[in-house]
Length: 227
Image 1 (cartoon, rainbow, N blue to C red):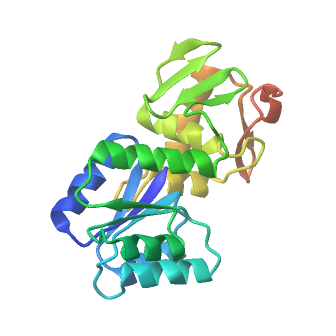
Image 2 (cartoon, rainbow, N blue to C red):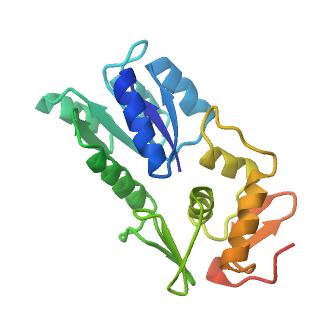
């Protein structure tokens, strides 16, 4: 999943971005509120981590503008402002969670996963669909209860497709979810990862809708390879 990190502290931003990438997230990082506003207008993110003390546009102002446009993007405020009135203001402005610096990175990652899980309407950390099970916490996948080795990109791609089973997702949309700024994307990268997934999980799970995109077959019943 692709996240937006909005943090002006270079050392902290680099550490958080590195930790999140290690957990399989794609992370775009901006260092001021104006740049964040542009990023949010141009790119669809799964979640944003928002500092409040930002140059050019304060984080609280940015959050209020986001909610005024009815943007439902999950937002976790990550800030040194620890006073009660600051926490109340952040939550009342539309934040979904509020984390005070300094924090433990493992707790932040757990909060991110919990919020994404609630957003998807799941109670369990595991994603179960038909014969397939994914565990985002451990990056483990299984077919009929048997472990299946997936690369980080394959896992992320399947997770993205399972967000809305039965819905067609374009290649461009999948690329946007999997790759952040500055990451080189081969023209056939998504197709290669999908080919590998179908070899490992069966050709009936993921269908190619020519000229439109790809979908996970609703009900886990397909018709051949979908070509």
